[in-house]
Amino acid sequence: MSLTWGSSPWKIWRSHWQNRLSMNGRRVSYALVAAMILFAAIPYAIINHLTSLRDWAAFDPSTQYDLDMIFWAWMIIPYLTLYLYYPAAAWLGSRNEIMWRQNIIFHQMMLISCWIVFLIFFLFPVEIDLRHLVVGTEGTVWEPLFVMMHAIDTPWNSWPSLHIVQSMQVVLVLRYWFPPDSNGLRVLHAMLLISWLLLVASTMVVKQHYIWDVGTAVLFAGLGWRYWMKPCLENLKGKDAQDVFDAILD
Image (cartoon, rainbow, N blue to C red; front, top):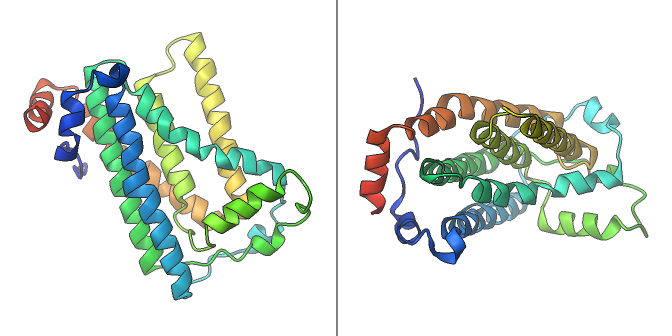
């Protein structure tokens, strides 16, 4: 049995859907990116800093493997590629009207999953005590990037890692929208997978997350896709679901 949270379009999209051909046919894409900033990025920053001020950890999931994990400063580059995944989903889910509807519903479910993770951050906070292992960056090109990252994120964004949850959701939806049925797409899928695996590794290598954070994030995103996101997107291929969608937004 699959979940149906967020499977009907929210009315906040109505004007964007009705005027979807404006802005060179990209009004919905812009609206989706703006929604992720307003309803995911900003609340994340608030929860992250509130949890830091609270300064209480529910438990400690750290292991010796986390401490022994090698630190490579250059891995901050794949770490920062997360911010390319958001516009990728908003822009690429545009092949036809069905995909546009799926794109809106997918982003609604991304937002809901963010809010679930925020609740976990707040109710069961974990401090990521690894930043003392970030060494040798002083005076290098990497130093300002780490300074910026540590200033924006307090070490209370532990589990499940939103970096992994959100990037994995985007990878899964892109693979769903563009199945590897040609040599060109198979190459692109391989590049996407390699890029994502580098991002996953980077969360631990740059000392931003524990292994626990990564494992719980993969489990959260994987189960969410299998029993929630994909079934809801599949449902939108049917005319009845499309008619309900249009009745709400038209």
